[in-house]
Image 1 (cartoon, helix red, strand yellow):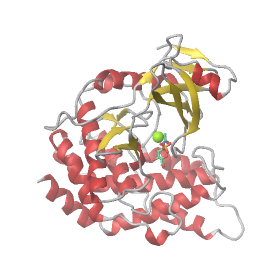
Image 2: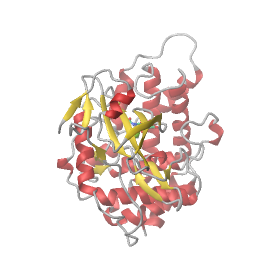
Image 3: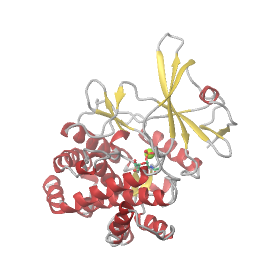
Image 4: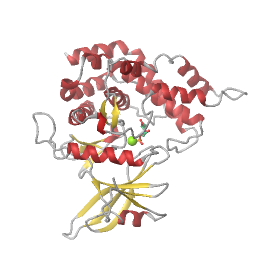
Length: 373
Ligand code: GN1
Ligand code: MG
């Protein structure tokens, strides 16, 4: 795959290097991503209409091999191009972002440190950081189910490992263990609480990896980051139209996606909650999201897949808390932060959510059994 070099050029010059259909009229920040920098580029087309694109700087501190990320996105586009919604309602609007090449015909722009790419913008769509209703939850579930159905026949051997160790919980635990021991002096209460919380759940960390190692679960193509705001909704119909943020598409376990979508969407307070009292797993939202997911994905799930869904919800919430907490201890190097305690606050949200999931584990088990039939 070809890339085109980029120097220290300002945004306008970077966007202008791509094959846009007209003059650039605006470039503005887009979305709330914790890793990459994202902008919306608007341009005036010769026919008088306006069109929009998504310009992104891939965070190469996180994605150390951008060529692998780009190869996976290109393969995904090729595999899904023109494929309709995988259900009876085949005329339903559904699209995935596509790469727009540079004027020189390269798939992206790169330098030693930077990687920029341009993607199509899903028009007339909107996204939310938290789930708004049971219908919204069901649509998030359907979008993930549709995505899994559309990629499940893409052989994993053709996808690259674009982010080594991603969602391998024992690896995050090892990284946490390698961080410095608690500093002497008066203990910071939330930090001590997080440490204790992690200690009590060491046994949880390897459950999915062990199921993979013994052949109970298989690697499949996954999205990797299906949090609620990565599902776009049609402004008019209110139905899901796209899944965006395709950097983490790679071989993995469907459970990483299912667990991540549920932990993200079924906590009405959201990931950025500052009042922990509102943080909980809402079982009604879970019911809606899982029902929506299974409507599409049920045919590709095994009995073992179903059985491990509740564990995955608990694990993915715990894992993200562990990742946020480790990043806080390491000096906030991975996730973008708005203040020095931000990753600690985010960890507290995920651990509080984990507790709520644990308190409802039996109900979650029953829910999956009922819905799977
Ligand atoms: C990161 O960049 P963003 O916001 O799409 C992270 C996800 C986390 C998420 C939590 C590559 O996603 O794994 O679940 O933050 N992405 C990466 O908000 O680490
Ligand atoms: Mg992402």
